[in-house]
Length: 178
Image (cartoon, rainbow, N blue to C red; front, side, top):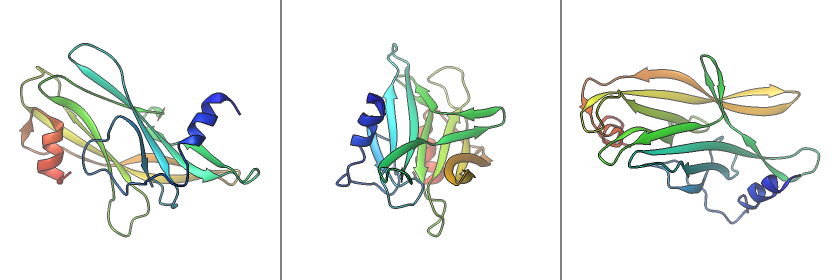
């Protein structure tokens, strides 16, 4: 086990607070959510990519499970299935005036196990003008390889409201109540 794995295991201490879902933008750093609905502290890491006035952030998602051989808590990368393969992170961006792309993790319905990923992206142009926003919804899916669970997000719906927005956070609030 390398130093990177040791650091990640430390963030899964049993006393960590686990938030059921994100009602607004995810905070910088490490956020604990029960993404895969197994009662364990899964992890979302939001990091800043330093730039000028135009911001860019990277989100990575990890699910926690108990290693069947060692009995220790381990983190596994939660991937995003795309038309052309797999992504291992989501980037978001914006400017001083408006956020052009952002995410939320929320329940699909009360009886659905796990959280869904929603990515809102505004058409590009000037950072201050209103444009159409597209919401892409990704449900949590599970594949098993040699008995090992491999969770991933898979797109299942795309919605483009008629109203135009400068900031996708406003679109999240107005259109989805998030």
